[in-house]
Length: 515
Ligand SMILES: Nc1ncnc2c1ncn2[C@@H]1O[C@H](COP(=O)(O)OP(=O)(O)OP(=O)(O)O)[C@@H](O)[C@H]1O
Image (cartoon, rainbow, N blue to C red; front, top):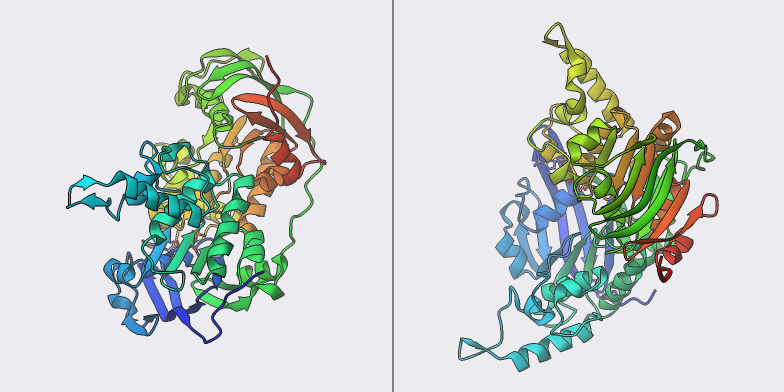
């Protein structure tokens, strides 16, 4: 990989002895980190290992415990006194998973937000100059766009690049500031990921210091120069990526070797049809037809706007069905709303679980057992011990990192919140489980455990439909995958001939005319 790492030891950022204690949790314990100019420095670790806490301290959102030090260039600061204003003044820029663009505003307007428009004597906007600036930034950051395009019309990678360009536009050059990217590819469909990574590599080659937080180890291996591994709030060390492979990274994260990509159980879906969908239309779906068999795990591969996620929403009754027919368990089914869908044995895990599917103010125990509270009542008494034991069992099976069963759901790390929602859905043993991005933000170890638990559930009786922008995940998990393009089903691929490449092709086929 082309590198422009500074040879003079010119560190863009140095952290020393950073600690953070939350009630009941030592989230960070003496963490040190050095990032050089021109370096892409990856931060990896299991869910709850402390990555986000460190990023929030850097952004000034959380105050670190006394004793740590943050050094930017030659200036030292006490980490406990670091504020958002310090972060801004030091040129630290943060870009998160979901690109925050204003979809109806133009690319030029989006770039002006936060910086201000170029104006005549303080009021009238100089549109010609504004557009010229936008044009330069579009070229510099390799964005496929024109200044006047509405940002909502850009593809997901271009929206992310627009946010990065907006963050970095005022840096004098690439040798100043630090760009912190927090899982920037998590919600990008497969083919878009490489475009984003290419631009990031190009920025680093010009001298930009980049901190890159991700769960995707293949991206770490092909993009970063060095990697720091977090485990239980400490760092296991910083390593040159060149000497690493996936299994070394995983054993550093987990503390022991684990089997990589365990062989999938042979597909054992029965021939019984659980679900038949004919000419379904509604939301972004037009005339989709497919079947699902008992114990089958069916994937839907589609790029943004393909309608894949809307199939799940229609089946769960959150997007109205315009026309077509759904047969569930040999009966006509018209999902009038989530309540009716749940009564028919359908469960749905939406992509934004923290907002839509969790009870953030309740404890982890309440979130794990909430759906089945009736089973803990005997003679009008709540069996607390049984409920707690069940919650502890789920915490163990799903590898949820929490200080206790009573930790509030909202204070779990992102990946652990997702595991809790999945655990609750699976324990209800639904007949049909609909999963939208089931392991987004979940670490590699927990992810393979979750895949195994989903397969187990499928073998018992649950039929599953999965939508994921991670086609490698679909290939690893599913018995069969259908491709969707512009609301239509364009083809299918089956295990064992599933892989990321064939699904990328499937998701880009042209729908047949008249289909
Ligand atoms: N506000 C809070 N109150 C209590 N505990 C917290 C709070 N925020 C984070 N924690 C705890 O700190 C630990 C580290 O969490 P953090 O979010 O930093 O992990 P992470 O490595 O970013 O995980 P993920 O990969 O799931 O995003 C976790 O045990 C989490 O429950």
